[in-house]
Length: 159
Ligand code: COA
Image (cartoon, rainbow, N blue to C red; front, side):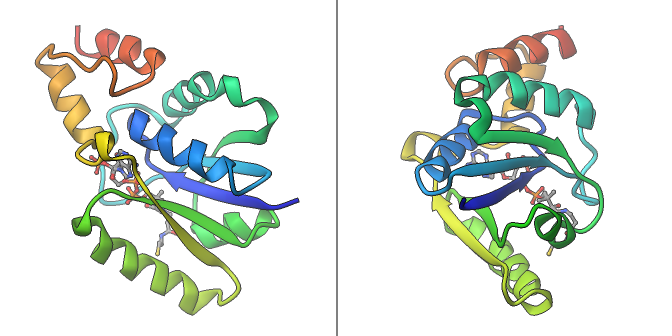
């Protein structure tokens, strides 16, 4: 069984992330979508809230997708799951340098773990969790850019 790990902050998950997940599911039998914390960021939603939103949004994919929270080094989590693939999404050239550096570091420490990059659909190339939160904060429209559950949670957070 081919498995892969798709890590992110997912604060909150957007349709851009869902697009990457659906593309990854065409390549792998099982995908672990994992909510981690980037030490450079102060998330708006707790890790538990982020997991709940992902689980609800990914329900249609059944047991092919597992959503979990993780703490610590990503490489350790990937090994724990018996996987050797990290999935990352690429939206624009600006993502490349950051992703390249992380992938190279990970390869340096674990030569058997590969990072696979999947390009986001054009429609979502400009999306980010921060932009979504900024729009929601000022009560702008986020419909079509995030799953319904996220739309609801954003309304609750920024009412
Ligand atoms: N559609 C929409 N947005 C996308 C996207 C897509 N397809 N792909 C990325 N993004 C956005 C995210 O929304 C996020 O936006 P934001 O900055 O506005 O919040 C941004 O791109 C990138 O964030 P994300 O994909 O969540 O990753 P990250 O860079 O914050 O990393 C971890 C999160 C958890 C994967 C990372 O911090 C980690 O691995 N932590 C564990 C510690 C570790 O092992 N560190 C060493 C790594 S070498």
